[in-house]
Image (tube, rainbow, N blue to C red; front, top):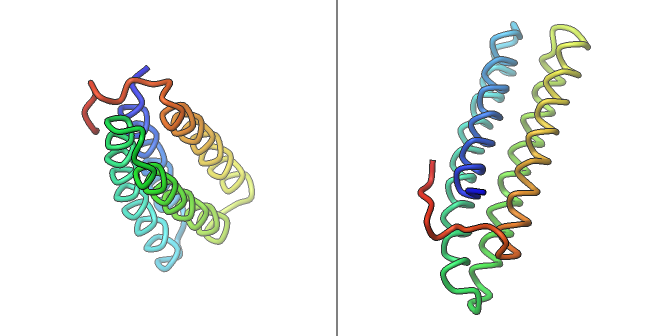
Length: 130
């Protein structure tokens, strides 16, 4: 399994969900919040991938593991803000529930990837971000 590719793919899915939700709401503030959090998430996912790569290259350096944890927290915080914005701007409850369910499922996939990467069970050294 290619952990960095999975991180990139997962963040891309979340950005797609945020853009779709932004297109469905008529509230400009909510649209802006969804798109801003999608951009923030992309940045944190790239940082997470970089830190995971560093950690895999030197498992004895504990600061790399701390950086992975901090990057992951920042990414999940951005995701939580996306969920809140999706709920706030939902045109209907069904759209909100569907968007939140997709976001949560994708976040669960990202969490699993990060846990495997942190445990050294995925090959990070031969991958490229994206």
